Length: 355
Image (cartoon, rainbow, N blue to C red; front, top):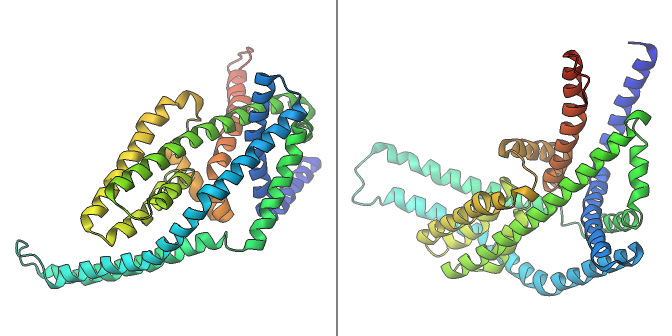
């Protein structure tokens, strides 16, 4: 390697170190980018369908989002907060009832159960359950502590809103600024990849929004039929956690199970079966039906990406794991597989046709 190559490599490493120090701010910027992509899709729809100037379409889109946000704050958020506070109070009670049930089973085994000296090991199971209950309570407490600092959350939301409005006003200028960071002979190709990233994000947003609404509605209806308390809060949590694949549905199941423990073990089993049915319908019926408009991601790759982003970027990284994975997948496929590996293979074979 020449001296300029070493200098370039050292500059790249230094840039990555600096960016790592500002990773939380970069995540907020990426959040604004995702929201801008979604709103820009709405703006383009308004321009195409109603032949509006872009400025008016942007104002109309922001107005629709503002009215929708007010409806959510006025109609959905107050009952959800009230029910969710009651759920958090019942979580320790439900786990304690589970521990008491295990202890009672150990001390007074049913007559149909044959004597077994190994049964004396079951008190360790109750201790483990109690420890898991305390651990889950602390875990959820730590997860929601991320949102508990009101001032920090408001500042972060304000930053996201400001960045979104700025980028939505003239997205082409910011796109060109990003493209100019690439070498001159690759800028056109970088623009094409950015367009594919935008299309992939729009497809993912549309698909995940529809499936989340599906999960929330069917969870609410099923929990009402089962007579589980706070069905509305459970349904909202199920819909929100559906934005986090693999981990989200498991997290959303903890709350209705805890509440159902206060009634009967049979209701716990019914809740588990209900959520399994809903998730299977969503995974094997609704998602494949919409697969032409969604981004195809391997389940194992999605889970690995979630663990990676959650480990290195914290709770916000877990929330943004899927859009980060969608963008990363697009860049890897286009910039690395097609532009580097496929062209290198074609050149090695002497094939001059474009890949």
